[in-house]
Length: 301
Picture (spheres, rainbow, N blue to C red):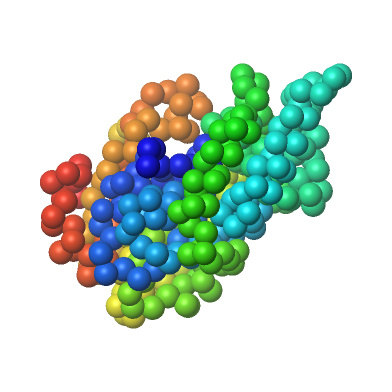
């Protein structure tokens, strides 16, 4: 089948780590739920591997989940929208930087269609979306390139659609509300915003539409454990010698390991070269599955 498809570069995506994450999903899993889906990298890889046949993708960033839904359900329309916007930056008398700013302004004023979302993601620096205090996208564009070519988007969008169409439900709601529908037999993969990236008072900063409170998140994990629902969490980690965030409490009985996530995108943006190790937590029922693969992971827990 070739390489695993991905729609667009997206900072925080688990595309590189998906093989490490998915190998801990039991073969008996009926449904994979991603409350913080982003661009759906874990579900895409799981579908590619034939691990599961039913998926739920959720993200509080509604234009992002609408983009994913259109990619999966009607890739022809997504490619059409994207191609028209992408080609527009080459129009006569059009400055491509000013064009990006125009599209971003339209997006922030309510034209949040999937094509604009995809174009903005394709052109921002390192796929690193930023939002201001009013929830408006304010990241600048990468001046060195014009964004992914439409033919590449088309190829990947159709392959993603082939993997997930007819198998996926889409939501844009608070993760706590979404998890009310989780039940035994599901595997919940939680990839909330990194700790330390959100304002302590309102739990958000310019990297995310909405942050997550630590105590609240721990309470949600407790409820999942009480209901006997399997889950995997990416939540904290290390970059260079710096630890990012609190380790989840021991009383949750989670298997904790660190996996090499490669060079830190944020450090690269700041002109540094540092390796990031991301925490991976497995709920109690997954410990036995982990024993088969633990030697393949960098275990520093």
